Image (cartoon, helix red, strand yellow):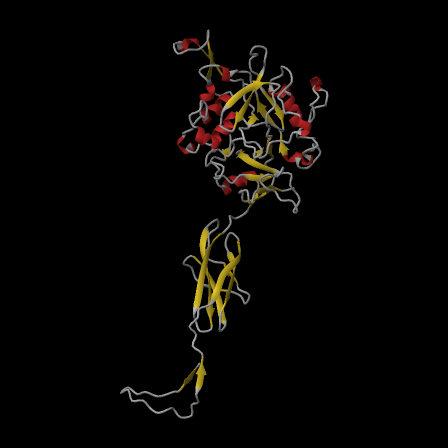
Length: 444
């Protein structure tokens, strides 16, 4: 503390005696900045950021303020809550600064990083195309707008069958799916994120006998809820998705099930993976044309194929587009997977995984089959147009895709992972922004 006397000083620097009628004043000189300044309780919307500014001072706090980047300062309320509600863009990270100012004007600042969120979408599948979630293609790939990129680059998480605010729809939830693409009419093609649960250690075999065509297979019937428990005498012949014990929301009488559209699922009878040249060397755009019967491909050679075989001996044909079955539940096609990682699609640059020439790119695809409970590669059943393959030494075959992007054929009574695929009606409403932390949620 100091005693202060008041004097007058003229322009010639003459100093008076103590000014009359003044009394001695005692003041405190402040040389200490506010301390323990911190930021907590960060919250954000698509256009605002709110923080709480904490701090102490030896003489007293006059005010607290905050700003984003080089923007203007906003004044906090008495409890330190400070909201920045102008000058912000959605889905953007900002350096947010908070400061505590004491009664003498001294201040201390601290900063943190806070991001605004993406504006939540609320609408139909067709409107979602215009909304443009991260990773959606800007042109039609095959027959739909598709999500393309790595696991971290697409916002296509979607909750289906979830209608309970007390239940978290997390990455490992049985309700969590991924959007493969959106048809021009607005139907969402989605695939289950987690593989199906196997009940009572029953493997998800394709078929126990020589019925390898998709519409005749046991797997088709078990997925679509039309297995009667006695088909072909197989003891594991129980429903595994529709009308199964494990997925009540997929009851054929439920409102959720009614949101699924029936579709024509292609199947064929070309044993292409066993022939050379291998048509599965085709890139995504041509693979789609081949699987939909729009492209002639080499399926074999007269007398067998080798390097010297003349082109006249190639066996060339199209898949028959009439070979299809109308159903609600299917599996993904090879072209679905191929399109999912063709990052340079705007230049029509599509890369095939088979033979293995692009392993790193293929394994980074968001659609690659994975299972956190499996350390080794996961093999997932896929729906290819050659699912009715040749009888090779008395063994009929079906096909899978693994975690390295490889395709492999297996005997029909082998059991591998299954992730159902289906289309949601274009009248379905969804809300959300698409990342795993804020997935789209199908409205009940």
